[in-house]
Image (cartoon, rainbow, N blue to C red; front, top):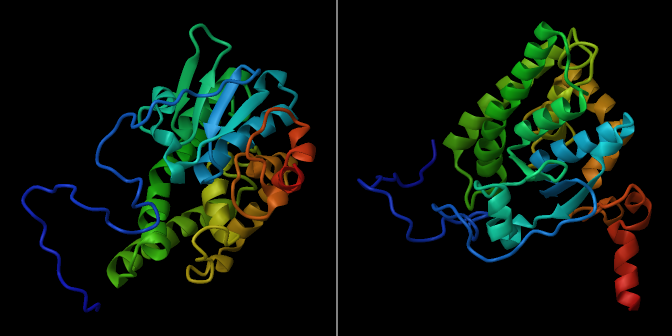
Length: 294
């Protein structure tokens, strides 16, 4: 057992100091805009405001998959929201998402424009808008939506629970790490068992359920979040690993992972996306040398 001192909660909690950890400087117990800052609007009907966290990657992968399927109406502008700098608390972004979380989508093909927030809601909105990546058969659709909402309910235990205490908290404590590691391993086993007899989450059909789950749980298997693959013995989940690898090789997934990315190798960072040609012309490895020369 840990020898950490026991915490006695007060009768009424009050915010009196930053609690430490990676995101302490931006965490507050209140909602709403903190600064006046309008959102930029590009030339396409779909305007995405995001960052390449797992939740952000869901939507950029979805949009790239729709474009790969030939849905020209899925062309989009993607604007970087730097949550470390508090962009999500600007008045324009709060207007798009009152919860101040990425991603947020504005669909200007409607009058007035339609706002959609929460990554799962965006995936479902786009799937229904374009009639793609969502089964039409009622039973298969129900299965797909069940796994979509499974991800929305499960990932907070992976990210806000395990990820926080294992990777981001100012100190490492045994109890919360063990508690959330147990839950995450249970979730990995749920996925592994499902994928033992199914190519994708809903059988042979690639759907928004896969697009929702892969950025979170595929990232664990690939050791791209929390540096915890060894700790969680992620390699032991063979079916999940097979699925993770297959989806990672999809061209639309490779592109989607690059959009609104502001970390990692410069050639994998496309901080803003406005045209398909941006993947070849405007990755950060091409822009930074140009900026230095200027």
